[in-house]
Image 1 (spheres, rainbow, N blue to C red):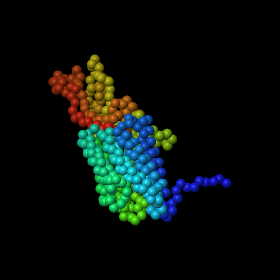
Image 2: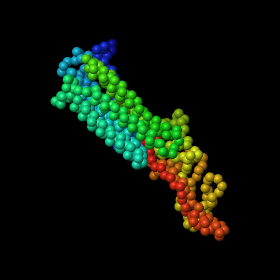
Image 3: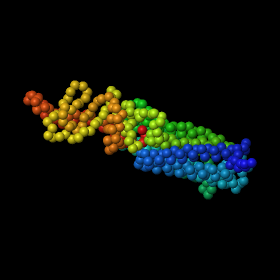
Image 4: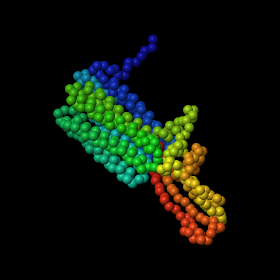
Length: 410
């Protein structure tokens, strides 16, 4: 007969520590997988590695450290009825739980840093940059104040001991949670602000914002944790009633790492697509083109037509065939080699789209819309019209440029 090993933990009416263990194990598995996916996407698909990735890596490391501290608490008796815990073990529970709280605040902060630097990576717009640095500054003040509030909650010689010296603990966590919610709301508002003035389709704007909408459930997790924390602090059996507050702490911390990775998943999914599902690349209006993991948006005009900018060689000075305007919305070439031709035309074929993107590596990080024309005249034109045409040679007007760096979100 084969012998089976006893279970690592047993959930009983007086011991719910196993629920925390399961939550920590499952949450860390998903969080680490998310970070590994982002690491692979940055190194092998659409790098380079930047500050936003470093911020999330720091958040993940702190999350692992916090989970270890929480597991030490469970090993020493967290989740059990307090009368079942040895007094020496109870001190170990308080110490590890104290360290867990500090690491939790730091892990959440670095996830915010990652999101801010991701926005800074996407846009050079000065208003956007100021908004991002405002969020970063507020978050930094928040984390410094939160660390002091958590670290100095009880007597200074033994701050981890919960006794009569601990005052207003729940009020401190309420303030910490309130500013946590405000900064998360500001990050979501930044995602909307980022695409507000961008000349792309509404569908694509929604798609961009949706990538950052996955952070919104974090607000609910913060509120739920505060609810169960209030129950724990008022309970006569705090080690047993701490189970649900600890579970929601882990859910918040692990989920924020997953949500921070979601905006970077598309290059990874594209790279993993074998084509067996017969999914054709999306080439519709306002779509995204990719080569080497970098994505560029195609700006469209108000009428819905795509603005396509095609580059040609420099004109030959010996060429006597000029550029001639014909009927319709398209400027065509009758002989000659003009440098730039601006067309308002239907969507190009997929082959043309991929060729345009592939041949323009230097513009992959830039969205550019440029409207211009050059007017010349034939030698055979009447003399009375030649002077008016001379003033129009090489004229250019109505130039609009919108730039935005985009390497991974879309």
